[in-house]
Length: 73
Image (tube, rainbow, N blue to C red; front, side, top):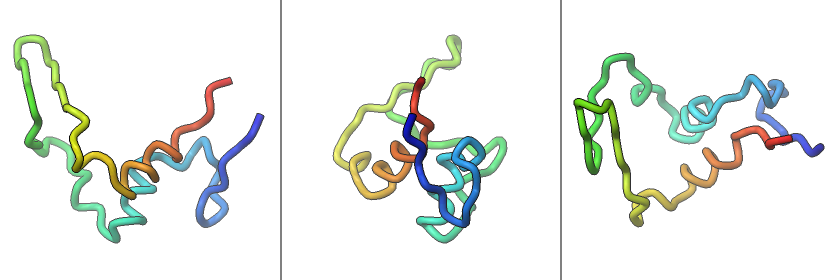
């Protein structure tokens, strides 16, 4: 099974997508408990959020995030 290299030598299983984004963006202000985000569609009664994969979702940050998830066995 292949493992991904993690910056700073962290174990891949402990290196989360939010850590990758924090390092890429240079700040962690986007990770705040209780922060209300703008989303494409929200059904409060179902606790459901839908985000369409539009152009803004396909950039370097998206690539880094997807690469940071562990491989499935």
